[in-house]
Length: 397
Image 1 (tube, rainbow, N blue to C red):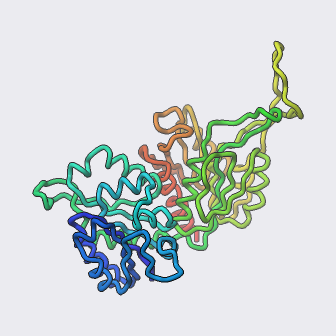
Image 2 (cartoon, rainbow, N blue to C red; image 1 turned 135 degrees about the vertical axis):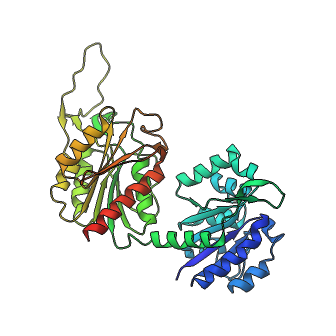
Image 3 (tube, one colour; image 1 turned 30 degrees about the vertical axis):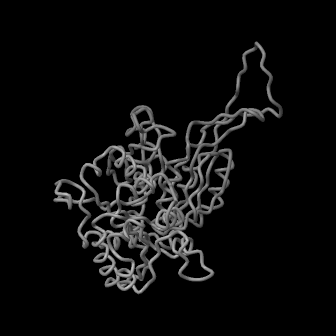
């Protein structure tokens, strides 16, 4: 089964982590526990060591196994990290990327899925600062197991109690299963803009940041897929585990997609490819003068339309960034190119344009179904696109 890392922070609900650890072990998983200093004031590390049969680490300099750097080894060995209970302080530190104790250091170093089960006073849970940190972590793919309503240890009543143990265990099992549901599937993704040179210092491009395509790559990896990411120029760091091919122009992206397409099972074209390029880029920088300058543009190759014609049993997903008649234009594009799915957004809508961390997509399927999604983080949008592609793939297999 899986190796799970259980992080325990200093909430009065720390005692509940004992039940969680025991139930996860009964489900067949190996559990290793890391505690914050505050948590040790509530439950002894010896208790968790006895329950799990593994040493418990607390201090960032704890090295239970000589010759092993504990925080790196634990981060790499974990198939999933569960932090239960998670205090407001711990959530804030995770959101800010701090690494000032063993738990936050492991969380920063791991590439495993992270689940968080908050436990705190209702006023602390509803505080705008806490909710901002929660949204920041969700945007990075962290899953929250929502707290429940009840009476707290302090006597206050409201939302903030840690979720019931069966709910937490079920969430872990579902996330582990999800992490393998695209195992053996090769997903090819394009992301970012393309830059079409006018001269050595100028280009035609667009404001795409690449965030949507990179989020899709992260989501596909989280589902266990093999991922190839063909990316135009961006300042983003590619997700660990993806094979990355960097390009500049639409022609280079076209060539890279053509070379990789035969080996993929799912192709997702999230890049904002320039439709046109200057016919004759200048070999040297054009100097400013008082004369008008006319550029003659020619069409770039149609990457999505070309590969869709030879898709066979592959799933081909397109994106459409529109400014008017979004659904109509997207439906026409889906039919014209023979796609299985298209995700469309109106870039003029608040929260849905280029360079933002959020998006509002509508998914349109080849069978005519239309699924509008609410405004959500691009990572959440990416999860939904990957799930839709997986459902189409499952029906076809």
